[in-house]
Amino acid sequence: MTATAPSASAPIPVFDGHNDTLLKRVVARGTDRATDFFQRAQTGHLDLPRAREGGFAGGLFAMFVPSNIHQDFSKPYNPNDPQNYAEIGQAEALGFTMKMASEAYRLERQSEGQIRVCRTVPEIRDCIERGILAISLHIEGAEAIDTDFDALEVLHGAGLRSLGPVWSRNNVFAHGVPMQFPASPDIGPGLTDAGKALVAACNDLRILIDLSHLNEKGFWDVAGLSDAPLVASHSNVHALCQNARNLTDKQLDAIAESKGLVGLNFHVAFLREDGAYKRDTPVEVMVRHVAYLVERLGEDGVALGSDFDGCMTPSAVSDSAKLPALIEGFRAAGFGEELIVKIAYKNWLSVLERTQN
Image (cartoon, rainbow, N blue to C red; front, side, top):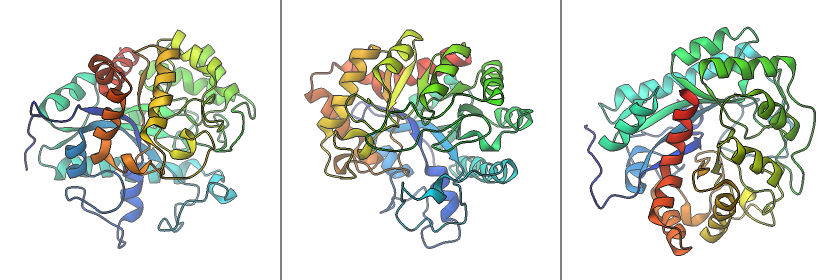
């Protein structure tokens, strides 16, 4: 197996801000749900054949630790089940995070040159140019990180380049925003003292701080402390869908002022005006959020953060192979090619580079 550079007729490359593929693969090990990443699957959103077909060139691969790592993941996820938000211990979270990191390196080794775990933006650019799938390691919810930041140092050495202090649950660093509709993200207190120290540690290591899932007071604490661009890897517009997971206009303005970025989340309940879990959500609804973000953040502040393998996507963009349908939606709305390419991958590379340097 060898990588091949994209042809002139290939889809526009997409560097995606968020997926849960590593989690999906780890929890499926040893079950009848396990799939071969190098073969096209009938389930899930992302594998190498579908990535190639849709132009998925790489992204931030999340390492998220569920509250109950022994739960039955074959059953539909219930966002209202309080067990899904129970706090977890650092040792357990670190052990499970190591499983996901090892899965990324296992895929790299098995790929025979088709996948690379990237530590720098030049490495990502090289992968895109050569048709190699680029994995950048990301932590979603920092339960695996101790308050002395020893684990952070080690994980950074292993390739961690972005981190969200919380998922939608509370931990020692901050308070997560619940996935409620209709609701405000202004729920709960801001960062703890440990959370403020985490921001400083990430700044020192040039690890991107992801604001998605963080409540509003925590958002403003990060905005006041961090010296890096403000980034929400997979969030949408609260004015268009009043889920607490989405960002208010005031938050968007702060991100714009920092020359930061928002990645469009494909989850239908964060897109639809009615907040419903319905797959028959038109691509135009996704485009509407992107157009709003472009108006608020400028052409350099908008990207994609699909949440593949961790959400319910619109049927028109049912998996990574269908990414061209979204690109065509941008064209139909009058987006120019230069803007589309920025949204597809260039803006992510820019904000990562400015954060790391």
